[in-house]
Length: 329
Image 1 (cartoon, one colour):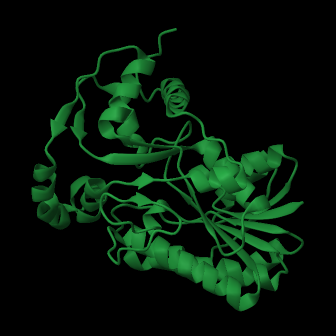
Image 2 (cartoon, one colour; image 1 turned 30 degrees about the horizontal axis):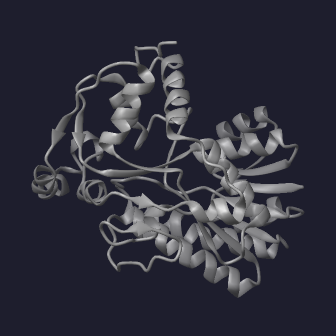
């Protein structure tokens, strides 16, 4: 079965691309550059150079495909170009669904995010959780609007659309974004620790969740992917156990982080190339506790225990020279 994929050079999309090829699928993938096209050719995919505004290119590439996986998106906690973020995360979804419908594709699986749920502080996020009406970040708002756009276009054009909402995706191959927290804790015996709650899904489980949503997901529905919800202290305890070493975190008071929000909002564009901002602080303080059980019940997804994810990720960090220590046997 031929499939069409966007975002094939990213973390989630790259794992999904390789899994589809291993499963013997013909994969056509949208890429933005000739360099990316050459990379995908080496894997065995058929690249098409263009972007999410090129509906003609996408229609041509989608012709003969039964499934479209729309994984491409901008995941920036402190975006510098808000226009581009909304153009990609909202308008891009509309373009993909319209193109798929015009090409005669049966189903689009779109990658959203748990950030789109918008659960109140302290609540457990589920697929049917009413949105609080407040957005922690522009990223969360763009993913929420992108979901709405995808489902609207699906209904308008008579095409099946299913949403997959991963929590924080961790595993070998990622050292950016929230993975920096894991890498930092793996590299330090006295890490600074902010009291927060994280929900995590292994990259292999995230990939499997996309495939299962394509096969078994109900059109017009969303599926949260989350194998574990842990506090930052829980995460450090797991890391200490699997690396067989002592870690003594230094706790940073949440009140101090709240007090820093006005400074972060002002300094964001200049500090750390935009890596510190009010959106990031609000998201961290809010945290996410996610119920990913619907994907287990209805799709048949089996989650990887978090300690196994840590072990695999740590080995990858060591192999890549990103941490200096190695696991003890």
